[in-house]
Length: 258
Image (cartoon, rainbow, N blue to C red; front, top):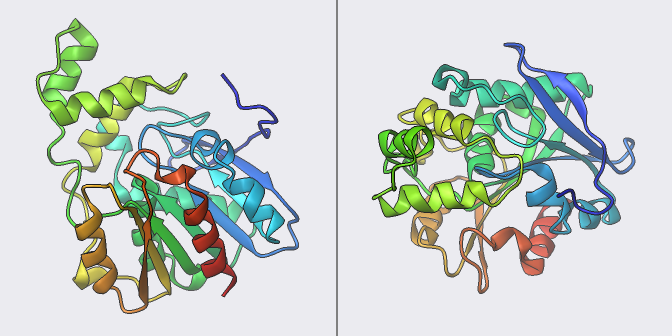
């Protein structure tokens, strides 16, 4: 079901032909914030229905939202080869090029934060500062059991691994999700570049993680390893409901306006 007052999307072709759904809100003359959602989510679920697009535009920002490949209204390839960190960062670059954006702020959550970490490094001065929510060091996808997930999707077998089951159950809650595409994404992205002290971006970065999130300590470690990193603990939130937090939105907007 679409959220009330859902904005229309426009397609931007990425470098390999995947069509990316993008959403534009606010005055294009204002400073731009690019918002990128987490795994199995979308711009509408992660940023619009939770009040982020409303509060960012009220704060004087122009907002561009990107449905990452495999998500939302964007194309959903089923090949793991279509999902690498290099490709997801190239998607961000393609959107910046299509909207003629030379400098932007970036807000990403979970998977979107991991993409933002690498985009801040790869795209040079085009990302001036970033808010990265729910991001730990290391590879959070390494424990996902791809074979179990595929057996569940193709043959209806019960998923025995708890973490894999949690991810699949979460993916099923959002209408329109293509589970085969999401499993392909996990398989394609595992083992790629991981965030750590050796490859930290140099822009100002605000990290934010829920007080009830199991990755809280790992997120603090990542913030400490970032030269211009700060940290905000989102009170009373876990990994899945952190984007609904008003204090998180307020802290992020304050940081973006600094």
